[in-house]
Every structure is written in structure tokens, then in C-alpha cells.
Length: 122
Image (cartoon, rainbow, N blue to C red; front, side, top):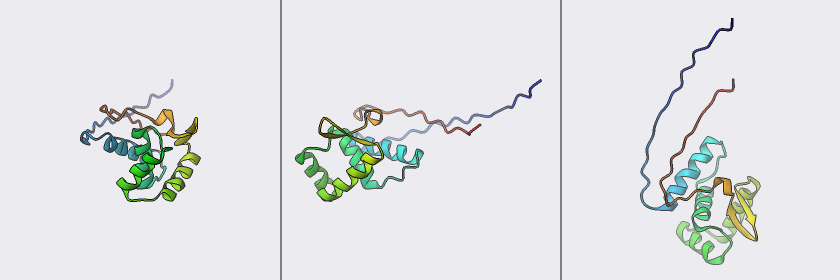
């Protein structure tokens, strides 16, 4: 007869209010994804992903200018970050536009509930 192992499952509920700004919501979300998946994304990379997700793409000059003004950065920096994030598969080129991969995209105008499971490799 096989011995049944009793396993304890820990459930913890956390709640964080991030305000009414969809950009803040997106930054929290992508920060969590980076941490959970050991992506080691920089704050600026997370900001670029978030901005792209909220604005829809990072291809138009006016969107890039808005990003540069908001985060006090330059267009060459944006290009370097886009290149890295495309290699990681976070950003994609879709019909000539730089966008966040659909599987990583949420509507950040709504509240977001995440269920995260950290599992042992049994």
C-alpha cells in the first residue's frame, strides 16, 4: 500500500491599490512578471513595456516623444530597449508596429486579479 504524503498548501491573499492610472497598474503587473519569471528587467524596460501596452504600440514618433518626455530618456535608448525586449519575446513586430505580445497584454483600465502558484518540482 502506498503511503500518502500530507502536503500543506499555503494560500495568501495580498491587495495593493495603485491608483486610477492605467500606466501605474501596468508597471506593477510587469514588475511582478519580471520578478516571478527571473527576467531581471530594469525599471526603464518595465516602463517601456507598460507604456507600449497602454498606448498600443511604440512605433509612432509622437508616442516615442511622449515616452522620452515622461521618463527623461532618448530615442536611441528606446531602440536599444526594444531590441532587447524583442529578443526576449516580450515585444513583437506586428504589421510594422512594435507591440506587447498578446499573451502578456491586459486591459489596465480594469482592476487586475492575479493567481500565482509557486510549485515544488515533484
